[in-house]
Amino acid sequence: MVEADDMIETDDMIETDDPKRDLQDETLITKTARSNEGHPLDKHKTDCYQTKNSLTGAVRLTPAQQLFFWNDYDSPHLCNIGFIQQTKDKIDADLFRRALFELLVHHDALRAKFLYLNDHWQQVIVAPEELHIDVIVVDCDGASNESFLDTIEETTLATQDTLQLNQAALIKVWLFNREKGKGTVIRFLSHHLLYDGFSDMIFRDELMKTYLSLIQKKSPEFPDKTSSLKEWVDDLASQTNSPKLDSDLKYWSSLSKAQLVNIKLDYPKNVTQNTQGSMENIVLLLPKQDTRKLLSSLRKLNVSLINAVVHALMATLLNGDEQMRVNIIGSARDISTNKGIDVSRTVGWLATARAFVLSGMNPDEDYIASLKSLDNKISSTPNEGYGLSMLSTYHNLQSVRETMLKHLPAQIDFNFRGKYSSITSDNGADIDKDRLQAIFQKQIFLKANNTRSAIFYCEFGFISNELYFKIEYSKNLHSEQSIKNICDAVMGNLKTLISLVTVEEGVA
Image (cartoon, rainbow, N blue to C red):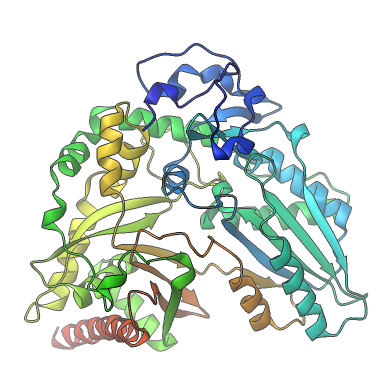
């Protein structure tokens, strides 16, 4: 493990035979003095400066970025996110490229590249003039709908692994143009290291508004610039090494994994084969009427939907005397206690794992009482559960970071997606949205041989005002039927909650 003071490199680096050598660029980091105290970036504040409101230079990794690199994935350049958007009017490629450039100037994190320097990864924000923005126009005049969709699929799948971490921008765009009057399909691809789902909504909104301004020959206008990614991560580092996280440090340092249970596997002999390529998923929908009733019930109980879904699964998997490590992915936009930090419209991979140790429910236990107990435990957890991620990323002592890192992997990762959709269409766009969704789902997130730490990835949100619940699992570890049974039980628990609240109202 590299020592803390070695994590920022200078231009007098020692050459190595590391296989990641091609991702090194020694000339970009300003030569600075080394120190054996504190966190490495505390000694390099001059590496970042503002030029026309655009930050450049070395910036600490966010907790999510650091975790990504700690996982040491094969082919780390291949971890794609993005969206597909249909427009009824044809997109002007030159103006779209300019709109994209304006956004990359405004949002510093989108100009990041990542260098592998002496056994660790470093984030560098490049100046706008160093960017290469790849906007590819594909002319599909006269193509049938099926042929047009085939072209989108073949083109994007053939080239989606071409992003290189040491080159900015880590973004690629295809504009698939149809004949006059049938518009364009925009396929936007980015490396996940640049931003999260919350940022994606900000980015997409501002991108299209900027493009429309340019079409109308107006100067683009952005909301007031919020705090930079650097300001946010530096503030997290400051909080981490203050008394604020003392209780988190004490708790996680004393926790024994012997106290925790793991998810029962159908095929325990395959425990080491939890690979990306073996992933399958089951999705269930709660009908609109039941979704409305559930949300109404939770308002009356003053319990969040996130905690209700987490409880529904924990009550399915565990008894009340059993405990399990779970992560709930949070936006982390309100984690800062510095009133001068505002990241409400900051783009970046800010989303961070909130770490909890949660219990299940005994068969004879009152469901609402059990739910409120779990809700209270989550709500009363110091620092909203972000402490473990912060300690493992920013603590000054290497020994502490290593200890905290051992606790970071969880059996289950929960992610609430809200009403987020990766596929959007203008009114009048006539391409098959289901086929576009199928194309999008073939996007490569990680290579098939990469191992995943969580046994279950549980995602939930809303589709057409219906609550959806998805479990992503490895077919090497679980049968399809057992996952269906778990999903059915979760939905059954949510319906039980609705009925119990309704009964209480009737009694009242």
